[in-house]
Length: 88
Image (cartoon, rainbow, N blue to C red; front, side):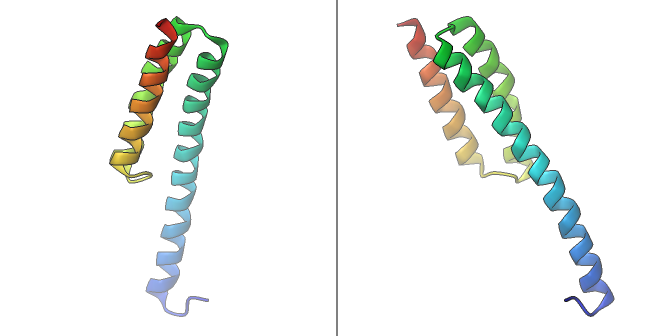
């Protein structure tokens, strides 16, 4: 347990940040799931629209430090590749 005043404050700050990051991560997963579902349904237009909505969310998470920028780029790239393969 934190003893000093500064340690107690740090604990409160960490708790707030954790809550924000958890919400962001959940939001990202929802957007990615929508793309996955659109790909599974085989509707390319819907999948492309879902990807267009998910991409900025993933990149925003990278800039906010919720996930690494390379991770976000990799996810966007792989989703885009799968969406593109629907048309073929």
